[in-house]
Length: 134
Image (tube, rainbow, N blue to C red; front, side, top):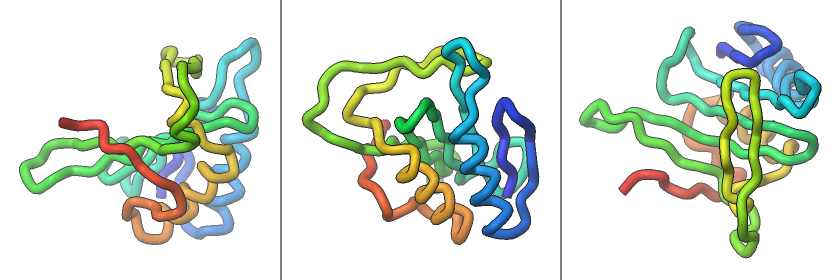
């Protein structure tokens, strides 16, 4: 499994190495309000399915991308507290992302999603998801 973040692109060949690297990526930021964007996919550079994690402090959001039967790339997003209103910004080294507060989960939940994804590359069942297509 390849993990791409502002820290580095690293191939992790076993679960222990993968989990340790994901934890490191989630816990590290670039300073000055710049946070980490982490992409995990079986093949490099980007292949599908994959997950992306935006992490800052104890907050994160996870997106799962997969290819449907017609070759379309479809996204799902993590669902946290659906009662939360408003949005927050995740500024990464590449760009800023606006994320609805109800899509925020804990950093640990994001790590758990990544670990589950590593095992079979299927949509992790440890959190709820929102479809982002019509």
